[in-house]
Length: 335
Image (cartoon, rainbow, N blue to C red; front, top):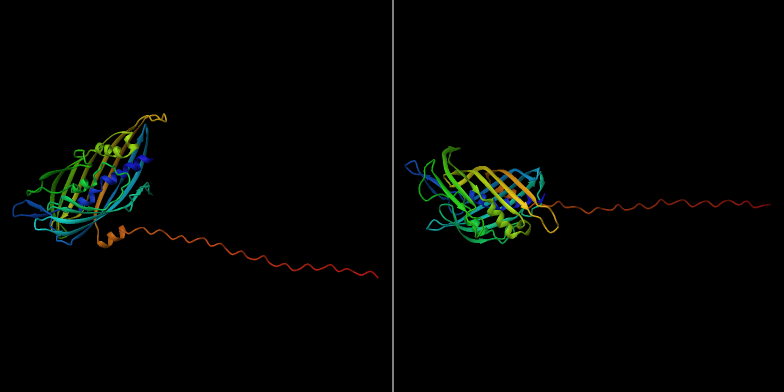
């Protein structure tokens, strides 16, 4: 079934921003009053490693027939905070590596696996990317041609913070687009739910809830893919994620949540007299965010070593055993 594979590829693109957003979280410094001023607060030279695992199921329905698929994908992000200027602007390099992608416990035929993207950007003290300095030139399979990865990365700090101090229970809104021309495709409401001590550290839990306009994503995909362009597609999604932040460093220490999407597509009649076909895809994913050590990151992102296949050695044929010469018959001489 090609449709779940293609949707999985689009999901990978849409979720590219997630690990970067998690690695660019801000420090929350409590004041004398029960409010928290939110700032990115890490020294230059800091390196932060995050692994994001997304697992769940896709159900593809055509007519009355439904087919379930289990899916799992991993991404790993290394964020280097290279420098900080007097205005509080950081120069940050994020390296995102796509790991294994499995469907029904089998590798998915998507060449984005093991793809590595390096992005250097300017980021303000609120954790929001403001300028892309450089980005590796990569060809992302099934990437909609109208999708602006530069713009997506600049707006990928999904849970960047407001300029004003906040207290537990306060909320603020973020939104960003997926393409150069469309309006916001994702709108989130973030809430500082609690601040508590855990293992000797003050941890702030921030819940981000919102909606994704999958119709905009599918429309963008249609402009860059003739097969998708033939479809009439609509969709929507919801996000409910929690980010756990170490207040002493301003970096994520964990988190996770749920991502749900529903997409409806209609394939019209074509020149081969194929009847129109209605397809509905329901996706439920659970994301888990984990901080990694440098050693764990290197182990997770090292290139897979292909097993060396030794050429088969043909056995040397054994020579046929020599046969003893036949004895000549004895001829008796007649007297």
